[in-house]
Length: 537
Image 1 (cartoon, rainbow, N blue to C red):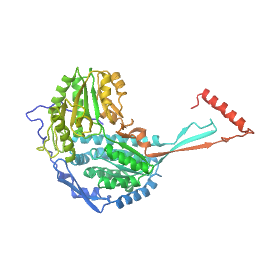
Image 2 (cartoon, helix red, strand yellow):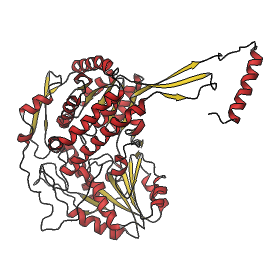
Image 3 (spheres, helix red, strand yellow):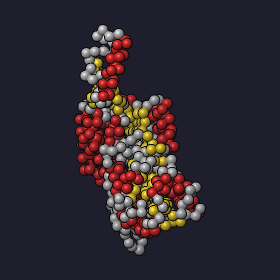
Image 4 (spheres, helix red, strand yellow):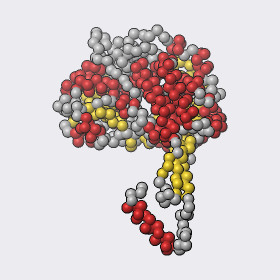
């Protein structure tokens, strides 16, 4: 996944709305499109979703009941039994076709992502990149990840051992609103490649994006019943999904993640959780201040800060702090807000009223308690109902809400430090451990310091994209930021059950060839010493 930040713009009113695109919500979300995308969604009730750009309704949608969820799992389970029998290379080929379709038809989903989340188009494109990378990776590597593996047996030549990987069955997936393409279908792709079916509950406000991806996967060759979608309120549909699933994949808040984990534990099924974060960026004394300032804009304000791995705490060495803050603030003040369904805006909207209230509360409480606004700090209802300017705070102290709580918005606090050990201690002084960023001209120094940070990913001289985009490597959280990993071998093997098949040949694992128990014990003891001497594993 890549992203780029243009040089700081100048002008009399740089935070004015960017020029509007030609398309409107009504042009994109037509009744015909909604009918097509919701064709496979069962629901006797009705609900709706809305666009953050204006607050207007986008679509009327079916709302699933507990019985609808049960029936979705029933259909998925029947389809999964057939899907699992298809050779893994043919399953993986569906992902490769999906990869091509996503890139060919990206304009469609970019419009949907923007309308449902309010994010700028470049930030929406990050989701297209991430999904294409995941589809390519698992489309190419799934056969290798899942192939039977030979292991050393209990006795050399006498024991033949094979590790097999079986699909878990039907995966229940609860996807969040902030990255409705990447964190829905992006997580489902390895589950499908492993032979599972998926019953997904996307957030209702951003479900059209997930439903578009389902439609495209079916076009790529995925059997429709293998991918079920249910819609409804989280407290209603979520527990039902956990109640029926063979494995649960959840991305969301730490509080809800604990509830999901408890429900899964009660049924003794596996679960993966990517949860909250209060991510830190460290600017060391030898950092390139100009590059670090540009990187901080990307790291803090992509998707209006509504990114699990975005930066909310900025620790800067005191020797470069003034120069860094000056450059960072100038770039932040020059950012353009916009609602256009086109490239050009630097930042979009918050997703809704709850996020706006949290951001506003954190900023206002901090200022009331002595913090200083360096840039931004106010809502922008003239642009849209949930817009808030990208905001930098200085003088934030422990005890302020913005210091310890996850804001999940375009707000970052500046802190100063004197030594690397102090910076590491400050960065680690949070219950979260999802992502971190280190800026230095000395790569070896940066990597060494990164290894001391208690986070699942660390990026040296970037904010989040290099680690997340390195899809062969695991990505996830430590501490209260979650369990399990997406990407790499862990991202697909978690959707499988391991089975060991051991075949004993020629001699049993028991006294034989006339040996009594004592002689057999002596024989085995000598054998164990020999295996150690000859470095058998």
